[in-house]
Image (tube, rainbow, N blue to C red):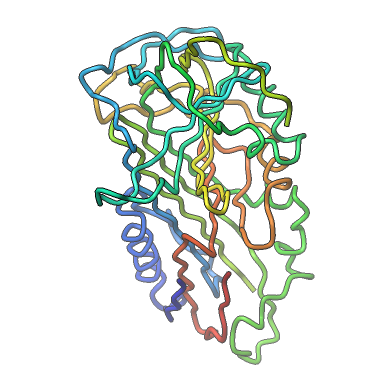
Length: 350
């Protein structure tokens, strides 16, 4: 759903920022508490924001008593301590492919005795090689339909299953990524014109996008997943499956990619990759597993990959992100438009 609010960007810019931040904090269940850091541009006329929040409990939770500390092998060859969730269930949804495996972990839906099948799942793409993440992502980016074609369709017998707990955060401008996808006009003062969104104030000024900031947080633990994403813009003037072995091991002790998928539509809700699940300080406290933001080099994967997967019903927030929010507005997003002295006329989503 969408809502519009009139705010005074010129006379009370601080109050306008507080309103936007409060809205994002509420819609993301306080996972993201600050959407706009600092002051807005002096010539800001419109702020467009959308937020998505997801909290899912595993269909079968991991037992905390089984979680252990073990080594996770980073891309630079270093082995660091991480907290690994373990499962001793005899069967899991796992697909074995040449060079990688895919684990599907369904989320619980409802609490009724005869609840429907889970509509959401996390799918973990684990390369066989410890340094194979970039090659796997490049293969995804170059192959249309790769994600859907390689998801598990049945359960297999499992030997070892280990998945690290992790909490990842990302915050950055993604205007450059969108320009790289061909959206140059959107950010051009001379060519872009979003004036039809507002009532003509007689100034003759056009509206263009000056910046686009994306923030995302995701946490995975024994109980399930909690995730949130915020994106805000300011306008100023498949290969064949090989037979699995008798027992399949899925030990995610090296970098992997993950996707949260809505299964009825196939839509991606969140996506990202884990290269270091430990805390920056090396501690392994229950609430302090944060990724080192300097541990991943920039990549061109996301722009190519989501260009293949996106259709006209979905807005992809694309970029080489540690946590990438693929925001399906027609299903999940709440949107807020704050308009200054130029009043909103229409806003249509979906």
